[in-house]
Image 1 (cartoon, rainbow, N blue to C red):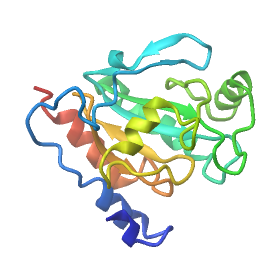
Image 2: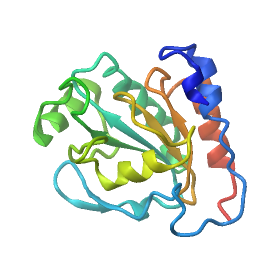
Image 3: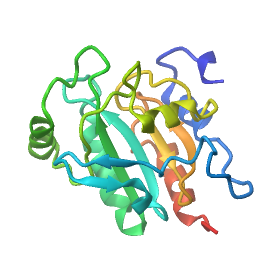
Length: 196
């Protein structure tokens, strides 16, 4: 579905296409490809973090990079996090160096950059690979979900929305900012939804 659009299609059109994924339906089996909170990953300081701890929240998972044309989206990610965190929303940042060596730094350097340049306070994790032979298991699960929710990571700052039950319900392309009106409307609807 998303492949029908040019790479840099109108952001609003792209956002409406990927944010329209259905959220209704019966409880999913544990092997459901859209269930992604079963992993334990390391925070950027090396501390293990169970993603299961975020169940009950609306989660945005995003692969980030410090030397990308889209790096200013760190500010947008921080803004949307601050706007909704008290209502049960969290952004999880995963640095990755898969695209044109745009995240070459160490975990320490990445953490320092994010804090100093963008005042990032949302959870950041150790650098991982989001594609290829060394793809992290979390991203194998994310990209293995049916399109338009899943499919390959095409660039830095591709974003996934996870509902309160731990199910991936939308993919937001790189060029669509997390503060886009359609994205915020989708976050609002997920926050308002009854997780039961």
